[in-house]
Image 1 (cartoon, rainbow, N blue to C red):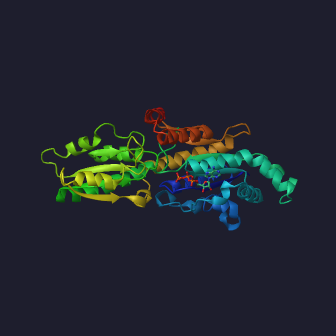
Image 2 (image 1 turned 90 degrees about the horizontal axis):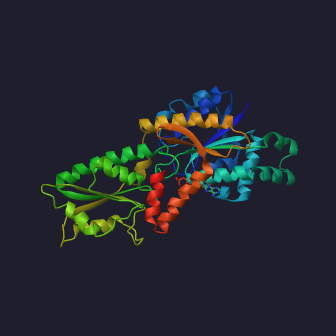
Image 3 (image 1 turned 30 degrees about the vertical axis):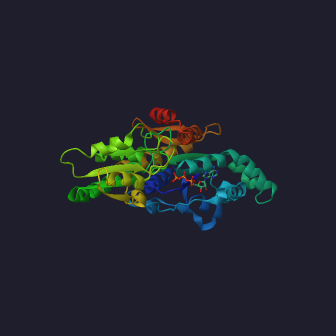
Length: 362
Ligand code: ATP
């Protein structure tokens, strides 16, 4: 029987439990044994009871459960070869030769590195007498499949990551709440949303909430945007103002657009003098139940991840599971990670046309 392991790694996102549930049940349905690794790579390096066999009922009710019930962590040890060596040993000791990882681009980069080092890790385990050649013999090839779990929707090559639509839904609900008080008191609110180098959450929330102004990392405001922003608020009868700022937003010179700075502009006594408040949404964006789309996405992609493991040959490049124009697809993981890093590089070097064109071609 094939033994497949599932883990969640990096920052949590809604829908990770749905992915775990789908992997567990599909693996069992396809005649495999399935294991869950607790606390991401931390659990793989620790081994022991951090690696647990799962059965069909163990994931009952997980589609609507919040967070990730198998835990997630950032693991320093896995960045270094000795940590990965111990992880490889634990895989072999548990008879596992396939790993499905739901995480962000960091987790998936680590996974691909693990796979490319795998033969040399096994050799070292034998050479250092931590395992025998007989023990490592059946584990010549490691299969890795990535599922992208992230609220940021920052991975190239997929239209949506598991969690991004739940986070967007949460932001919309919260902005609706903020709007009530903004309207009652004739106030302006500057709302900061997550997304790191990616403006997807801010931009989509801006559209979905009808915000007055949005700041995103990929396309800093050009020209006299300060005046432009303040003009909007002079419209007759306007009682509420919502400005959404992505946490990674900056101006064309690379200076951070901070909510404080926007507040000062809107509240300026010599200008609009709006009664302005700041709301930083923070971790509530990752919280709560997954929306219907994320449950569906996690389920279909979890199923496809198991199929990808079972179809893999030693020559198959490490895939990740994407959704492209509503179709669940397998794509090469390394290319997607490189493309994702390319966008970040373009933003950091202030080549915004390139950043936008890379996002557009995704
Ligand atoms: P998020 O999008 O929420 O940040 P992420 O998966 O990108 O999720 P990271 O903190 O970058 O989060 O990575 C999670 C873990 O993956 C790290 O703590 C580390 O254990 C492993 N990892 C990340 N990058 C590498 C790498 N280059 N080599 C080895 N392991 C890595």
